[in-house]
Image (cartoon, rainbow, N blue to C red; front, side, top):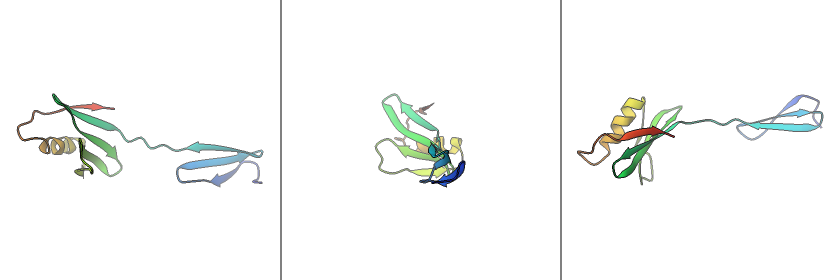
Amino acid sequence: MHPKGSGVRGPAGVASVVTEGVVIMSTTETHHPLWVAYSPSGVVGSIRKSEDGYTVTMAGADAATGTYPSMDVAKKALHAHMTPGSDWPQFREH
């Protein structure tokens, strides 16, 4: 039994506290904003923000095309991976 109010380490991202024999657990969620890029023919890719930067993944790709230092650079990179002559896509945050 843990003393009243003692902290207990759980799995990564989970904190728990024992209070009068009851374990109270809470999770820490990390929100990574996501923008989806749309062309007239549908979804062409996405950009996800993380601690490392802005990661571009083209629709249907098995892996990301790269991580970039700013949203502006990521948008340009995504557009550069589209079919040559494609119009600039619409970016919507999800």
